[in-house]
Every structure is written in C-alpha cells, then in structure tokens.
Length: 322
Image (cartoon, rainbow, N blue to C red; front, side, top):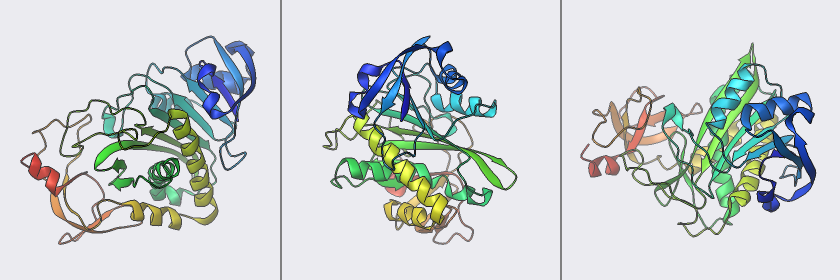
C-alpha cells in the first residue's frame, strides 16, 4: 500500500518498505490534493507499508503525527469539493484536535490510541444499501478487537454505534455517504478506538464509563490496531458488495448489548455531549426485543420501530436519578 506520512519513524509496526522524502509539489496531482486536504508539512515521506488483508484492497494511507482538526470533516469537505481518490484510502492521525463523534460530541485523542478515517470511492453499492452502511464500521471495529485479542475480549455494540468492553466505551464510529441517482458514489467512515489510554470523560447516563484495550488486559499498539481494523474494513466491505447485508446484520445483532435489556430512549436534538442532570424525561422505555434490518429497535409495548434518539440502559438511568 502506498503511504504518505510526516512521521515515517512511527511506521515500523506497519511493515514500512521502500520510500523517500518528497516535497508536496513533486507528488502526483491526486496525492498532492489528498495531502493538502489533511497534511500540514511541505515535506513528507512517500513509500510503502505492508498490505493488510485482503491483499491489494487498499490504495493509499495517509498517516500524520498530529491533525490540527477533524480528519473526518476535512476529508468529507474535500470529497464534496471534488477530491478524486484512486481507490480505498485510509487516513490515520496519531494525535490531534477537534475530533468528534455523532452530533459533534467531542472525542478526545490520547497518545497510543487509534484515530482513523476511511474513504471508499465508487464502492459498487446501490443506494438501496444505505441503511446497511452504519453497520459496516462498528462491526469492523468489533471484528478488529476480537482479532487483536484472540477472542479474549468480548466487545459489544450499544445502539447505535458505540463499542463497549466490560461496560466501558472503547470505540465509536461515524458514517457519511455520497450518492448519485441509484448508486453510492462514496463512503466515508470515521473510527476511534481507545487502545492505550482512556481519556478523561465526565460520566453520563449514555456513557457512564470510558475504557481502553490496555485497561482490559490487551497488550497491543496503535499500529497493531490499525492493521487489524484495515483488514476488517476491507473484508466487511468486500462481503457487503459481493453478497449483500445479511452477514453484516447477523454480526451486528450477535454483538448487540441491547437485545433483551430494559432501556430508555431520549431525544437527541442538540449537538455536543449531554451533561449529567440535563437530559429530559425519556420519550420511550421498554425492553428491546429485536433490531430490524434498518437498525431500528423493536421495543415491548411500543407499536412503531424506534428509528432515532439516544439510548441509555435502565440501570444507568437509575444511577443518575433519571
């Protein structure tokens, strides 16, 4: 895989191969545009790293020591402005500022953690598959944690897209798509995984605790996690394009932490994190009996599927007096 990086000394764990220093102006036009959208230095290293499975799937990786702002936002804006990628492209920031989750909730970076975006131009999917796409990154994150730990950790998915280990949030994802007519023209994913450190995050009913793989006993590094996650994303997208969403939905349901649990669903209309004591009364409550193909929840005693809102477990609501 071709890589552009301002920190080549950090790439040994990814199997760094041949390469050389280059100025931005000496790069091919497409790589110039990609670097200018996400990189900050005028000189960088251009070379190769070992291909994760499936071989040949990934075209480019851009790896920077520090991102001045959200790479997800920068890459999304660049794609809207016409950035053309030669194929699946991964962007990793070893640290940075301005990272966020759903609805601009802050995601704090910490040394040794993984902050990754992935863009897939012309993935070969019909627009009818859009309801399946939010499952792709969160299932891949679960796959990667299982692979990294040989199955010793049992990550689960808290609806819609939080990944928990031992009840603590260790990962989260973002999904954005572009469509034209009846086809998906681009998929953009943002994935955060706490590998080495659990950032300090005030507890709320929705995220009562934050953890990391190291605290759960996993002895892995950010580059181990990057390789595992790139492999999982490649496999899951190839599976989705080739065989449809059935296996992805089965994996999502299998990893779900909400089926059979009593939950509360709150409105989710304001951007940013919800402070303790601020949530209004839940709009819905009940026991989750199933998850539909579009990821809507089937709740006991609720006639219509639940398609939106923010979920908290009943026991966490009780802890916070809600």
